Image (cartoon, rainbow, N blue to C red; front, side):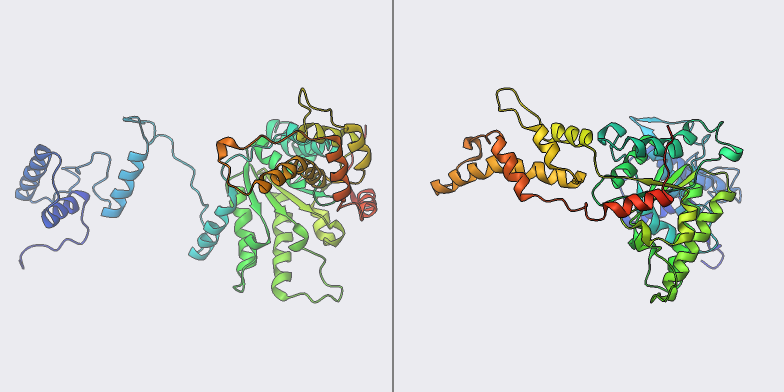
Length: 409
């Protein structure tokens, strides 16, 4: 025992042989194991170890100088490329892009792993045609985000693409839907960031999260950083307000990182949304170069929403769309959806009243169908639903006149 050298770095073949002997694992291929044992004896007689470079390792794709866990990792990567029993031979020729850029410390990498949970992996499946109205906002978004990705040749020099875009308007008008459409149509790496993603209880981690976020965005460019309700992250600084030191450092780091985007060539867009644009800091408004108003829906958009949510079916009374459009002035898209839901509930309420009077449980297959929506149901829904976003419409118009971006025809 004293003459035997101690193994400080086992190969994959040594570990496999030790595991089979120790735990009595059934060998799947006896001939292969016998050949491994014989090659090991020959190598020992010649003064070489089983995993020497001259003899090679058991698995031809694994390098003998790797440690056990490294060889297991290589083996798992190879197995993941097998599709229907066929191994992709081009896997080694095409190196995959790493998930994280090289960070300066392990703490920064841990923060990057927490931020990667906010990356939208799948498509939100919201297209431009799904959003009714808002033609001006859609055209500005296409000009600012979509066109630089499709035609990068034209957006150079003075025409370099805008880095910051602000969507502001009353709540429920479709700002988040526009962001989902950008994520669907542009096919960029989409970071859906809220205040909970970049605010930490540990001192100094909030500004580090902001720095790591923009490093990840540059690494996965072209990418889009969507900051929903940005007024909760970077409101106005100073002016006698009770502002914590950590909050001020977070705002300063965000301003620095956004200003640093202009010095890089990567396509990284910051898309922000807010219901209170007048609460934003002036320095942030300067960095959000495109400020797009998402207004309340116009009559044509409201009619398209009603026709989609409450379609007229053959054999049923026609719904008064003109009355709905005339009576919903000042309603947002969310209010219109609630109105249509309230109208659709009226025939169901009548049916539920009849079922409750029977005082017996009716099987699912014997339940009667819900009746059609009548014009009286529309009038009842109009009386029970009120607009929620029309009180400050004049403030949005004034902010748009002072800071907004318009398309001149």
